[in-house]
Amino acid sequence: MSRSGKIGIAIVGVGGIAASHMAALRTTASARLVCVQDMDRVRARQVAVEQACDAEESLDAVLARDDVDAVIVCTPNLTHEAIGAAVLGAGKHLLMEKPLAMSVDGAERLAALAEDRGLALAVGHSHRFSGQSRAVRDVVASGEIGTPRFVRVVMNGGWIWPGWQAWVLDPSVSGGHSLHNGVHLTDLAAWWIGEHPDRVFAAGQAVTSRALEIADYLVIELGFPSGASAVCEVSRAERPRRASYLELMVVGSEGVVTRSWDADGIRAWLEEGLSMWAPDGASGDVFVAEIDAFAAAVRGDAPVVPAVADAVDAVRVAAAAEDSLRTGRFVHLEGAR
Ligand SMILES: NC(=O)c1ccc[n+]([C@@H]2O[C@H](COP(=O)([O-])OP(=O)(O)OC[C@H]3O[C@@H](n4cnc5c(N)ncnc54)[C@H](O)[C@@H]3O)[C@@H](O)[C@H]2O)c1
Image 1 (tube, rainbow, N blue to C red):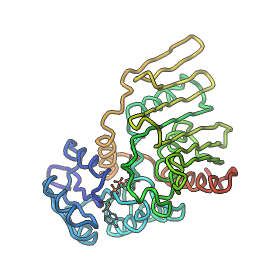
Image 2 (image 1 turned 180 degrees about the vertical axis):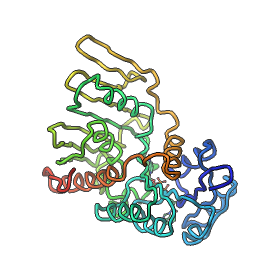
Image 3 (image 1 turned 180 degrees about the horizontal axis):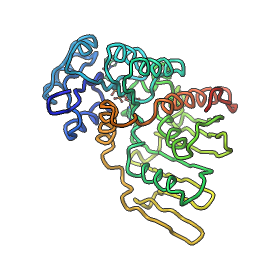
């Protein structure tokens, strides 16, 4: 930690999403970017010049630095477990981009390592930090709509093509769409319902091309121990390409909270009619909020968000969804809490 009290951060993997973290680090007072590293060394050096930080040639060199308190890992999903284990093994705090790992075993290994070492392990479930997701959670937590029974999360769009990197299309590197994007939606559903799912069903289509090995249009259905349920729908294949549709809904025993297509705010409906309307339902600066929360956890001032168990569970659910896509069957989750 620097004399200014800022957490010293290294970023490993300086591709697409790293830009969002670097922009947040330029803004926040809680942390500062010390160095970057990428297997593409030329790119790492270019980014280091742009960000006025150092470029390191290897992960070992990053981890040997005393001014690096924590590492944000922004590399393809397949690399997460090995890089995460090296980071935690070196005694550095870790903000891992989602998903935590490609397998439940891998996610559990990282969680155990962080716990053994007493290190903060956060996973980049960035939607947890959007104003609208938090507003929905606040309405649910207020008790106004009663007990949550059903959640619908829709995140559809057409913007991703042709921008998706080849590795995302390769399920052996990305884990498939459930692990790559589905985790965002299922994590929100579980967070709002307040339970971990115990059964999962998924249906997918390869809309852009039948040759695709991942489902670019995906629906994941979740069941929870209380009997509550959720439908999570994610697409990256819509036309026109600029299409972007977000819908959030929690149905409770006493009312409904929605954030819909034609409303920027969050609305809660009870028998008496519209109960509350929070116009501040916009996304806000999600990545600043995520890094500030991580820095607070590194300092020991707050628990990590999401809880490590939730991030492990997101991997468990996504792996089950991919399984369901293959078999066409519901998957019952063992070890669901
Ligand atoms: N939170 C979000 O909303 C969000 C959005 C997009 C991506 N992501 C996640 O961020 C991660 C990166 O995705 P992206 O879209 O930025 O990918 P990307 O392909 O744009 O960038 C990945 C970078 O990692 C580098 N790299 C690959 N293997 C490496 C290794 N072993 N060591 C060092 N560098 C390595 C590549 O050279 C590249 O520069 C993924 O885990 C993805 O799931 C999260």
